[in-house]
Image (cartoon, rainbow over all chains, first blue to last red; front, side, top):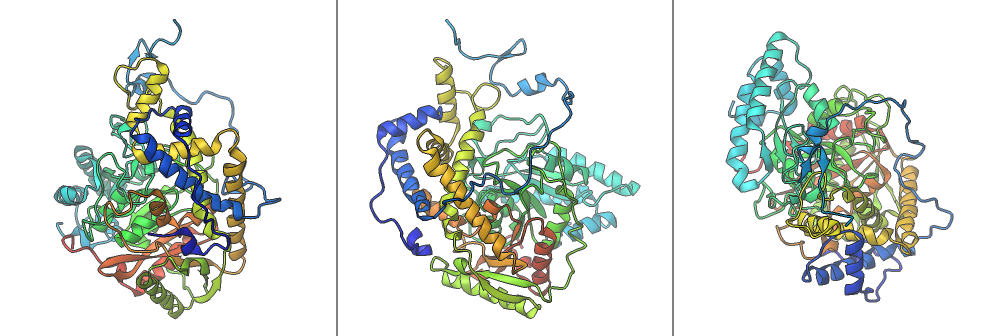
Length: 114
Length: 487
């Protein structure tokens, strides 16, 4: 197994035990992400997410004052615009062929408003 | 035709043009090898037999009429992350088990336009999230060099298929090493082009600022031939770059004399297996003999590339995978109580464990109160890593080092600890963060298992990187080795 500190001998490798996420925090993240978890899954994610957050906390050691965030690997590339004309044809029947439930060209979901 | 697998894709394309054999004969021979290996390797999710044979017959007619293109009649496979019109496209997930794409990815359309014949869709880690091809809903892919071992991932099906010579070439994608790492572990050639070089349209998104399509082949010359047809501007991809595609094949034979090669000090550190390092050092000696000048360079922020990746990639993944809602396409749970229950259970049941782990990691690092500390911080460190690469390319033409810390590992060996699995990509992630082209080529064996040499170049230097890979393959024969049982 690779120990991150061993692999790259970080000067200030973090050694205190990882901050553990609580059951409630995992449940709240899962709710935000619209993921239904079984009660058996929660402790598994408590453990692995805590370890991942501990692992990525190595970033704290980097000095980033005055460093601009990089969101894209090709600097200078700007969003292209195109003429505002219709280019797509109506293919809703083909697209809706993949839908779980469709009626009269509409996607069906459980009743939202009583 | 039963011995086609001793020929390269380039030779097969030439043989087809010279009418030495037909595309139908070649496709039948490939399909026979796919069928014979499927139980052992599980490299394919779908095999498109009838379509392939009818496309091959059409290719033969075009070849007879003299109207063929560069790849007319050449059989290939697509990673099941590329949308294929009328053909099931699963991305290795239960979520898309029943998804039949209504359109072709640009990569698929371009290769089809060049005459290539698709034989099927290859197995992969679910939504390309993994380094071992074990997270697939369709079961793990096995390494042709030893079926107890992983082929690497996430493009493990494409890599195993090419390594076992089931097809002469296959498409793949690379977000943190998913082309290069399986290429290394399976003893084949893989190229991840510059970000923006190959269209991402119709390539199911994982992390949009990192994802890039490429190819897996037996040799750099074959990769050049496929990439020449795949690359290029696409108005349907908002980050596609409108710059001409050089003739990668024509550039292969350039002499290497004077090539300035930087050896990444951070890649030859303690985590690298000693024998693996030995093979890479031997390959570097070959480069010296070819006239390259080797110097050591340091990219001090590179060690932080894995932590940066495991903030940025999950953040982008949690956003991209929000589209899977159980409403418009994909898996839907049984008897939803209400709309929230429909979303949550469809996603909870449709996604596998690793995908859910990454969606939740991404949701957490983007959530209120944590965005600055994790996501913005990671983007700033990404800038530092990018600046390290820019500085290095001020003094060297290409960077070289190992592709992976070790050869292939056992199936199941790293599934219990995500961090251990993530560290497989320790040498490959940097190129994704900076958007650089990089290849992995086979450079020897450690205990009968292949080892990869990685070559990274500046933006849009695919021709140079492939040229350097090809020069090595002209004087070595590692890339011609085929696993026992598939030779």
